[in-house]
View (cartoon, one colour):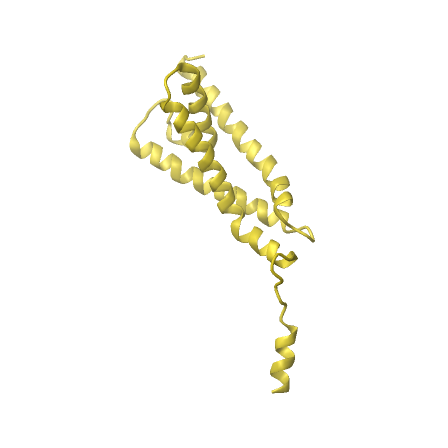
Length: 147
């Protein structure tokens, strides 16, 4: 009996909204948060694509490419089709989840880790992914003769 009460007192207690709770929330939700951000950008891009007008269509296409950076791997600017877009969507969401989860793991190296630390780790990774996607879009436009 005495041994069981002693071991129960040594277990760490998680204080609601405490340091450990923030670390656990960050670890569990970092990837999902990145996917949600990409889905929001994708939704805005799709809305702009369906609005009439040239500038909204171009901006919508660019936002769609930012949200789904793996589309060039499937040849989407040159060739279309449901399967190519579906594979681009699935792999892009997987990529965003991996980037968000990796950012949460890097943010948890700090003693007190929360969402500002996640954002600090996520931002350079997301910017690199976005710039790579836009570079591939520009390269495809040059090779297709659009630019």
